[in-house]
Length: 496
Image 1 (cartoon, rainbow, N blue to C red):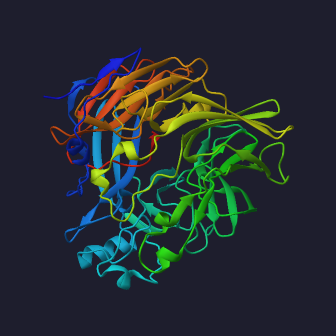
Image 2 (cartoon, one colour; image 1 turned 90 degrees about the vertical axis):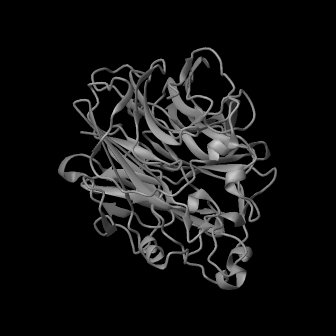
């Protein structure tokens, strides 16, 4: 029986989940499908939806009987769910990276993974193999006529947006050098400077770290054209997955992280397992002026940031001489040690993400912190038309309990001005991925639209796409997917 989920507009309802049901989502994707029409299992697809939901995530988690050490080491697989006149079409395909093709042929892992996956043979066989395996598994975006599969430590792979065929590595019309890092977490400026654009970055890390900040046109014949490009160098090692934008600033948070490469070099750990938080040391905000803003050409500004670790920001905005940044903070860098199995994770042993807002006073150099929610959350976003502006509402995936860590099973809408919230609970046996908020094109109301979320039902072992009303998280439609997909990472809606 399909669990239709429950909307609760007042408080959370804790689910008594089974860990084996949560872990059952981790399996290889066995089939690649093209243009399969999805059938409704509940409700009705909104007639206003025209476009494609593209999502990326690890689809190959095991080879030759050996599992990846961390799901982030799994090879990227793209899912496309297209909407046209209430008809919904599904396709999926692995990104044919160089490493994926080689390991397909070998039938085993022949590359080390950044998050700890090892080749056969132990430390002796892994030592001094410092190659980075571009797995193209973190995000997927449309830029000009290219669909790009992103992995932040290397260049993107270009795909055909219609059939998802891999074209090969992309240098974005000669903009990127061979193998140059290109962020997996771009930000889309909705039009602060007359026209929409994509703001993104690449980072070269070391004792000093250099950020290359780039802005691209996104519309018409100029889509994909580079319109801004600058480089800035900062002291310290930079671990940067995400950033935030306002009309005048690109905002980075340099987590207080040490990187000891010795265990990686000698084959005992993956590169990411060599990261360690610096206890009781403050992070730093790096504010880089955007070339399109009123501080163009000025030097970056640096401010102390709160203790804690941040993967993801939700939004940022300006008010006079102040900048506000909303981010998901962890007490420490969460990792899976070499002797641990990610499918047996103890949620109580790792820090939960909590939503906080930092107020940066540009004149006084003072940073104030406010906790907006104690509830464990991830994958937060605002209405994309409010990116870089003050937004009243945010949508995010959460655990079911009020405090402490747990699997993500609910979607929460939070009023960022007064703390009012409502929830959609996917059900005791179900677990959610990153939500995507899609504005209603026929209105300017900030919370009018839909929230898409792919669910894993661990009891029936099926995936479903839930379509929720953004305003109150009432379930509007649910469609069952024709294949089983592990928990994904990021994706984007591309309007037709």
